[in-house]
Length: 123
Image (cartoon, rainbow, N blue to C red; front, side, top):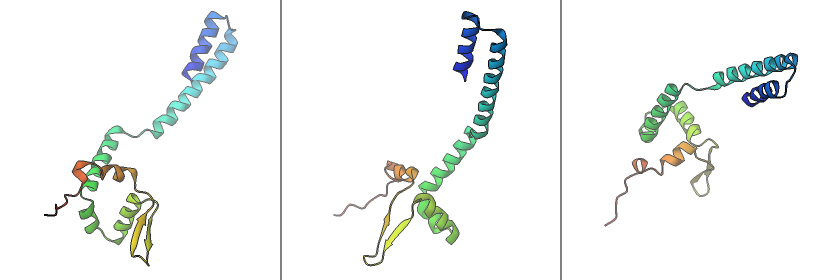
């Protein structure tokens, strides 16, 4: 919308656009710009709230096993859907589980040094 306004101003000044047409279109473009700005403002997330949400999510992810252990059935289902959004498949014959997709946050975190389990080295 900024480009349209700028181009209109250039046409008005440099190409001697009629004042009536300029005023008509400048009003339309500025109104459109205001409307877009309002739409953007309603969809913007407050950055301080986003930061708090990320910190809370990371703390939960760091202690995911204790969060799971202390959760009731409903909370465990919610947590499971958060981590494995496409569900978990169970193969009864082989007694195995398979996940189709892991939430990208958790899949990235499992590769971080601080989130890896300490494995005992066999001696």
